[in-house]
Length: 363
Image 1 (tube, one colour):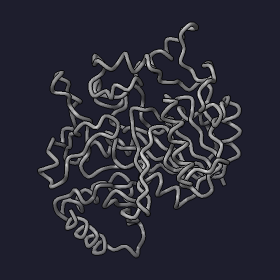
Image 2: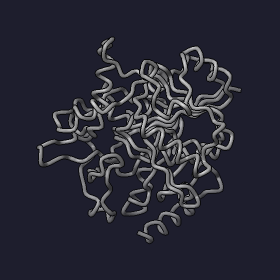
Image 3: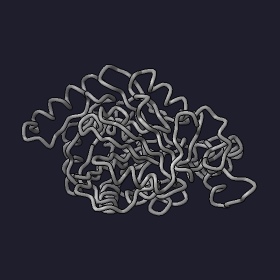
Image 4: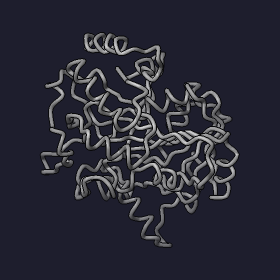
């Protein structure tokens, strides 16, 4: 059996992909993790004991007890310092075994100081985190022999090179083809796709299931099981505006309106990477349908269920999402313990309502 599970954000990011990746990795125990992350997106995982991991480079499925290989595909944009620190921290915590091999495709791009500097003063795309990712992507595309940022062509003087293995396409093919269980962790969100999002208020690449597989260097294979999990929030967010520079981070869908965290009785959220206040919106059914159809989402994790101001509101979003896909998991808080598997016949609607009311009362 060769099974692959893909985790993809169906909105504008920050839906809880990292949390769900950790939960699913513990549940299904993949041996291979694949990703194509970049430092303009942060993923967070809080374990049962309260241990908190905030990663930009390493997938959070590293909690799988069967893990043998981590693959950072050719579509990655790598911050070497961040990746090195995350590896060291995960090993010190005993979460990542030194025996786990970390493979980085030799054509992956590296975000360097010159890229960050070029974006630091603004003048970038609306909503940019200004972490140099767009500039690094542009430089790779320009293909200048005297100025490149492809990891396989850089001098190997960074301590990271003592821990990772640079891999060719053929080597990644062997790893993927020999695997029985692979978990693929996406970054950002479908509605930030440069092709399918609300251009120009988007990111610098496509954010869909098929593009994610290509960015991971995944060959087209005959899967015995291919499952795509969509991750959604009850109240989707966009990154902050920057009023001082007149920068607006973008619109939402016609059936969604902007609100505030105060209006729904929640503390103001900050973006993981830039620590700026997020914007928040009501749920868009149109957005959910489009994301589920474009990415063939088989199952859905609906997160931030406790943000709904009434049980009727949560139930309505849940039922409407079920028209697009199958809502199998609900999230009521920031930790793995707060995820409820609702696909089981043992979990009744009354049981879920009780969980919601307790989560809401705890706010």
